[in-house]
Image (cartoon, helix red, strand yellow):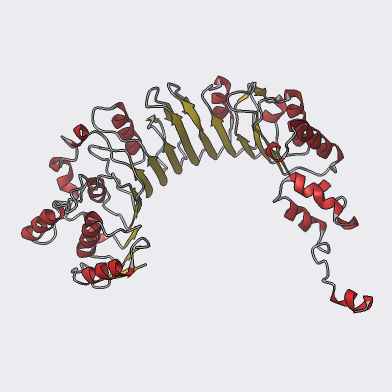
Length: 479
């Protein structure tokens, strides 16, 4: 094949023909080290990296820390004078150069940085870096993530005039000045606080942000429940709350009546008499105005739940140690519930001592709940259902006990039910049958049985064919 034929077969370089702005956008999705390497591709690519609006420096990509420091210096020195949209610095080494880090941050600020993501040093071994005052006064900064702890000497006024998204990570050596960040963000809308707290270490935060709409609290804890944290939440515009904690904290509520969505994950086991029991009650009471709730809970006793008068969509993540009576309570306490998702998890879970199973708090509070329930069907029919549910063939301690009276939501509002991770256990079957039988306006029930073989699926399918339907239009879809 002659050279002319080879040229004709050569695939054209379409990427190099793209406009500079599009190439900058493409390179903004890779680390800066890889973006710089493109300069050897051709003359066209020689200086493209120097105007990429995102700078992403990750020390873990370098074997020699000194080469990492030199690389960041070189990039900032030879980069063009265009603005920096995002600056990410990820360093987990023990030794850090404070003056250098401050110089890099100041360079990003001079280039009108919009998003700043900082992890500077090992969370437990490194000396803390003091953030430059220019950071607090930056007029272009909209997103700030502090993934390690810093010393923050916050000015008396004029802080973060444009900051809307803040992510702060705490560790065992809680820095007092970092607590003051929240109250110095006049237009903050989205706040995430997370981290790892060691045994005996507690975190006490006052989150009073008038403009805040979304709050996430995610904490792991190394040790037991000693030293519970506490949060005072005074956010009148708060709409979304996401809480994941290894051990439950104390929640004190100021103004937070605008809540729409809440996601609560509580891995801890707790029962009446334990301090964590009262903390869980306080948390659940504070979110009673939500319309959307996702609750993931192990075996805990919640006593009398608050009424969820506005709740329309509920997702309940069910652990293998879960007490099914919580579902009964939630159905009773959610009169306008329209959508129910039950997600069954089969992971192992350490059980509480059997002493905690005695004297369950799930005794009916008939005086407080009688007025919110609607009776439906004959008394004999309801009694029969209750007797069926109270017999657990597999001898499980946690079993489904149907409500004494059909909940109002089943009669008038519940339209969609989805059961994920269905294993064909007795409790799961009884719950599905009950909702199908008494769901007067139920449109669709979806049952996902990914873990079952063909024979088990067929057996369950035939069993559901015999279940009477409360709604003539309801369908059951097996997946």
